[in-house]
Amino acid sequence: MKRDHYHLQPNNNPEPSTVGSSSACGGSTNGKAKMWEEEAAQQDCGMDELLAVLGYKVKTSDMAEVAQKLEQLEEVMCNVQDDGISHLASETVHYNPSDLSTWLESMLSELNPPNTFDPIVSSGPALPAALDDSFLGPAESSNLTTLDFDTSNQNKGRRLFEEASCSDYDLKAIPGKAIYSQKSQTQTQTQTHDSSSSSSLNNVKSEKRLKPSSGSHSDIFPPAAAAASSSSYGISAESTRPVVLVDSQENGVRLVHALLACAEAVQQNNLNLAEALVKQIGFLAISQAGAMRKVATYFAEALARRIYRLYPQNPLDHSLSDVLHMHFYETCPYLKFAHFTANQAILEAFEGKKRVHVIDFSMNQGMQWPALMQALALRVGGPPAFRLTGIGPPSHDNSDHLQEVGWKLAQLAETIHVEFEYRGFVANSLADLDASMLDLRPSEVEAVAVNSVFELHKLLARPGAIDKVLSVVKQMKPEIVTIVEQEANHNGPVFLDRFTESLHYYSTLFDSLEGSVSSQDKVMSEVYLGKQICNVVACEGPDRVERHETLAQWRTRLGSAGFAPAHLGSNAFKQASMLLALFAGGDGYGVEENNGCLMLGWHNRPLIATSAWKLANKTTAVATH
Image 1 (tube, rainbow, N blue to C red):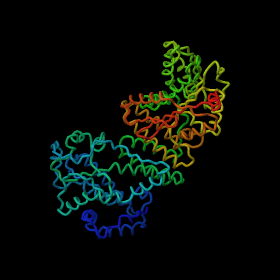
Image 2 (cartoon, rainbow, N blue to C red):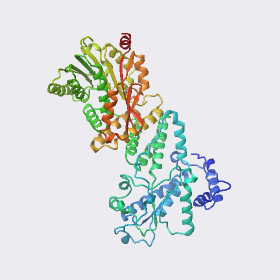
Image 3 (tube, rainbow, N blue to C red):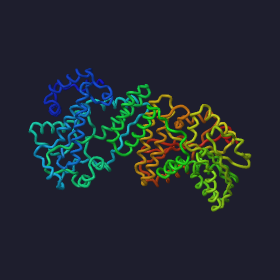
Image 4 (cartoon, rainbow, N blue to C red):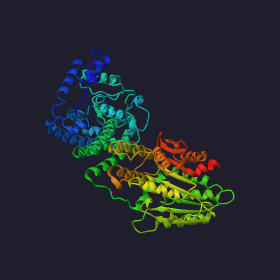
């Protein structure tokens, strides 16, 4: 892979800092220029294409030698883990991993202990070193590497990856107060100049700092060294060897680059390249922690399924789907936000009605309706007669789960003295429904509300299905229709665009789950989202049911079907704001009003949207009167 270096040509009148940086690479500006010339001459000399895609420069003729060095490095790393790493010094050295052969040699030379090293002495308890921690950055979470891949910034994102894979960031020393190895006076001065000038040479806005973060020590150090690292970072005061650190942020950029490159190879039907890349993604993901590692793993699995045509079984077992759905409900505020905002709109539409009927397209476990029933019970003048029609998919074990949900709601209604009527409908698809099946009563007798949470996008997999369902809804003559959908565009015709959007969307979702109190709920919620990722990436045709679209797209579709928007009131906004306060004080989450609709997002990235609709002719009639 060719790598452009026109922006790295040496200055004719270098500043002292520039000269210092050049000396770190070759000893002088002329030496570095010579290195660039040699590198440019070797660009077309048989570099391995698969490794070049990931930014590694390895000649095909050197593959055997590199493989041998990798085996040697693995043995040395095992020995280091067995002997402990307290003999290594606090100097941070950041090598160039793109030049794989040279990097391996450097790693081998640094990790091989000197002959004077006594493992018996070093295996003892590390002396508490009085380290000056003024160079440590603020304790902030850096586990997740997120990039914005909006369509408008697609070219900008690609330039970022091109720059990330070039040598502009390959050699950057992490600044800090360190103990340098006493190999030679000249080498010490060279490293000092390189550390002090790397920020200005590469136009780095903020210096890279070694900073402690949650979970990072357990990932880098073995358990025995983890305890010592909390007080002295596991570093001996008398050691003179440098510690080799892997820059997880740069690996995060490489990981995203590899994911996008693999998706592009899949789109171009270059399955050999895609297969090689999906294997690399697994190795790169290991260096990450937290949400990014999990997201990359799920996307790698989905890509592998698409490459090897191992499509997931569909539909998902209903009992497992319900369990995952309930854990997702408990872990984060997204479903609660959907239920509360929709319930508030329905409650206001039912004001003054004596008999009300809710038709729920997303019944599941009926978790949405106890709150609405309790609100109706407290209504001034007494509660109305409440009728509920729940629609859900068939169960694989032939159990009548919808009826079980109805019994539980009937018991609640009896307790709070609400007249209750329930009927459950099993349907493979909402498109199989007909208005005549629902035993509708005249609108003068009974007010109808239709509710759908994360269901309508599934109809887009079948041509004409969404139009049929919206036509049936119009025949119901509802007072209001409440719709909650993911705020994302995962239904475009281009696979790479779909993949990029979904990678951004689910990275944000997984990041929001990291603050969950219950680890079990969080894991099950990740599985719940992982099933969606697999469907978006691995499946096509009618099997790809997770066809999320944006609020703007739904506005266009519903408007053309004869529906007019009904603005959600201030009460719905207050309900949502109170709800978010229950989740870690609402930190990170945010509610946004968008032309009468409400959106819930994480760090200014909208993730789900609630909207309310009325029949356009009914709205016109009300305005006329």
